[in-house]
Length: 250
Image (cartoon, rainbow, N blue to C red; front, side, top):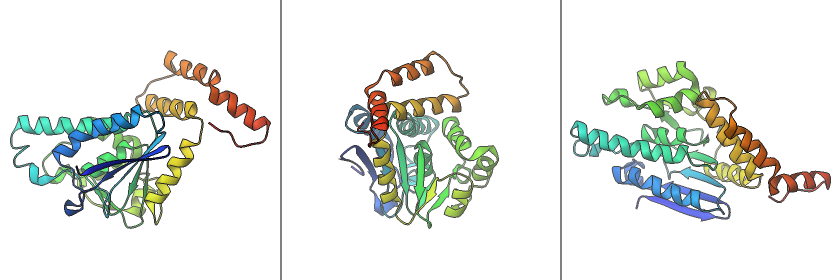
């Protein structure tokens, strides 16, 4: 398998490990993502996920498969469904996700990174979404992810031109949260910090942000999140730790 899932303490790491293809994602790899993410979701001991590559994050979809697996409309639809299912599995994971980006992060690689809650990148990382070079219309869900992160003006420039962006530009437009010499170490540090926070708060914040980006408003589900939090053991521990002037143990 060219995807590797590992667990250490409260943090899971999913590594895209196909260096001979600059970590390009095959149909088989896309198809494996939902099952791997189900393992992360089901493990109550895991509180955050880091997605990383090797020398490169990912050069995107494996274009060598397009002449066979995407040779006709039915094949293209089936392939696109696998990509969307993989992207949605990342975006819908109820735990924080961080992309640690080295080298190339293009096409489907950028799609994976955008599905994460946040992105940290090396100063020499490069970014692009290039369906305009292939005669493909980028799918609605992933286009929305891009618009949510960089806004419509930059989404237009990225998709219309298919140009490659440097890391400084990616930081300036909000495509990445931080630049750092060691993005994997920084991503693991952020993941550990989030894992140490009140999980009722983290889960609630992730769900509410998702509802806001979907154009929804405060509703019964959101109010239930408020109630859940103040009735939780996390709330009891957080207040007690504050009053006792100690670090909370969530």
